[in-house]
Length: 322
Image (cartoon, rainbow, N blue to C red; front, side, top):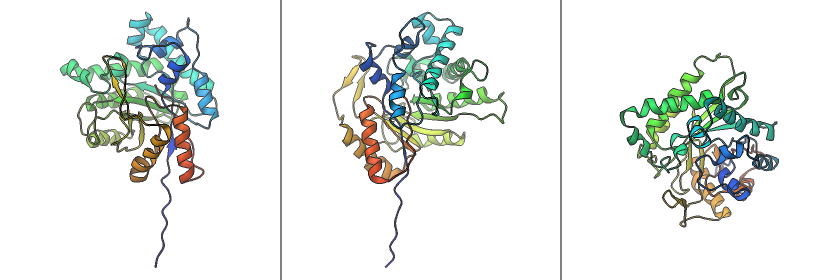
């Protein structure tokens, strides 16, 4: 008789939802288009740096910035800022994370086009049809402008971070726009310079399709072929088949009209961690596991406990999400 043993899957842990914690800690409305930007506004009190400090002191390694919905265009629309001031505000969002966690590796939340509209289209990709034949160039220009606003070298901040996270992306068209924008942004930069890793997290309506109905395997292959990481975020937790990074919500659905969470299959923290182990980690072995909407630091603690049962000594990764 031959006895064999299998090492438990190795995985790292992200944190939970930033915006939900921001709402708990402040009076910011859940769905304000620039709720994070307003908290970073030069004339507003800045209350959220305690959040990354709290998480990092708890063992997290990679805080992700609170810039998910912020873009020069919507900062101009909602806060009346010109490009120079909105760019400075975006860079300030990154600097807050760098200052709060000076010994950690920071990821910049690059968000998605739909997230800046605050109409729920980051989950469906409806904006692709609305943009029509101009969708690809328009989305490429959108992401180029955001990358340029954060900047590289000098007053820029992207040379100080380790990851760029494009999140809640529902459509292969936007994925292709992101790939083009990233390639164009880094093209003139010295090839010997250390560049942040890029991941693109998809929203999904099923185990096989993105929010816009594109085949996940097709989209994942395009991201992988460009040398970047693939993720799944926001999606309801059951049915996810992650490639690299997975951070779904706790089962609730968002009503974009009523602007609230619909009671449904939401689960408690320990059940969430159990699903993570049994349905994602063991069958598929994702590299990074965490949570999106309605998850909390307590959800992260439940994931940590579940991992401790499985193994010892893995690095703990925290990504700071809205």
